[in-house]
Length: 395
Image (cartoon, rainbow, N blue to C red; front, side):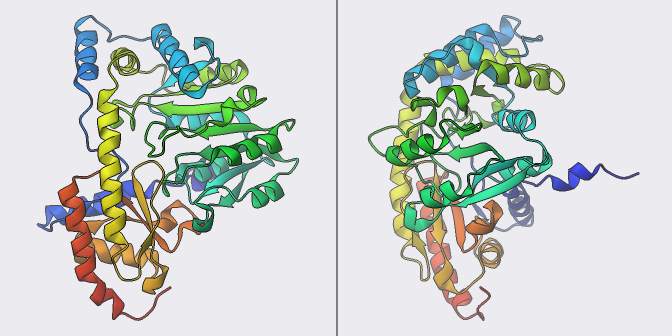
């Protein structure tokens, strides 16, 4: 027996592989500080947990509508309309078990052989994986440090062709923490209006930003709402990664396709978690605000610490909870240095190359960990520096 050829086109998410290696070292008695996984280290706010418990007691344990509970879709539509400055209704909302299915289903519904899809690189590895799986051609746009890890607009313009069917945006961005400035988003919208192209706007970190103004959603620009899929969810904003609940807001023709794919795969999202989702969106938001403020404090500390490491240069991110450190001056390959730090220093981070060709030469550090652990990680890296400095260059 053999697997279908399409399986060879599916990639992986390396963070989970590195986490497994780190857990293996811990099982053998090694102390490891985890900075590899993209997961808030905060508890889900109590009122959300209580809503889930109440839902279980009330019997929300059976199948629900494939598209999502009407009450939750209404709450999502109100929330997205208010936060993005657009007008959408519950008929534009699809609720899925995690936000990844919105990415998965949208690409399956839109991309086929011969189509091109533009995506950020370095970027979430599932973008390229799913484009290839659907038979499309991935077209990477390098996110460069000198541009603040935003799109190079000239390069983007040059990559648009008659075969471009999808553009993926991610702001705030994983792994760099970059935020696309509103004026750049406006230019991207101007280039796409009038084209036969959809935009998948990954806004999963929409509430985790450190400037005064919320990151711009391309859906809010003239002519873009009808050609945009807004992807968001509860995992990052409300520290609900294990609850597996996300959503997409999109034109109705795509809602029909996504609903059909849901029927063929998941049937529906768990009903009691959706009741908790209503509480998350309509209840107190102070837990989110406290979490973001703590991330801001950690961001300053970890970037300051990493910039003191010989050979490291770390820009201060505008959003998300990742520090993306340039380590080219160490003379080491980023994969080799990530392995070195895990095995020799007990600091588990990710090689920027896990996020694409243009991430090589960088390391991603998640600062979703306690301040004490972050500062200990910096000290361990500093102590390890003389050992890698004496190694022969590998870059």
